[in-house]
Image (cartoon, rainbow, N blue to C red; front, side, top):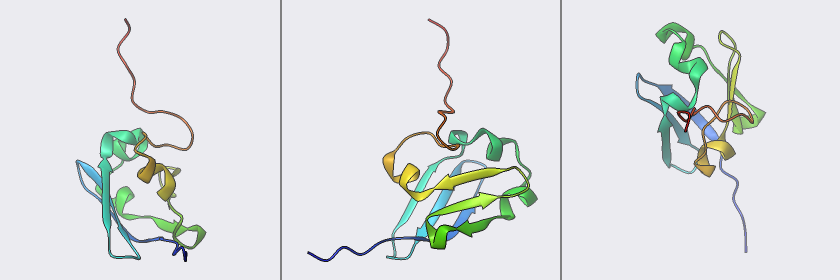
Length: 90
């Protein structure tokens, strides 16, 4: 079995979503609220990104945010290794 690795080709951030366009033609999106840094960022800061690790992730230098493709595919809130979704006290 031959495995083909998939990488981020392009990224777009709207007021609601972070959308990654992948090298195999797929597009995946996660809610913007998964990244509190990008939620608070201006449109100009969101548009200033660098694809890192040959497409394994994205870095936003203006807000010091890194998002890795594996985290997006895992379906977990982003921001490095920390969970960003805060649950109300019980």
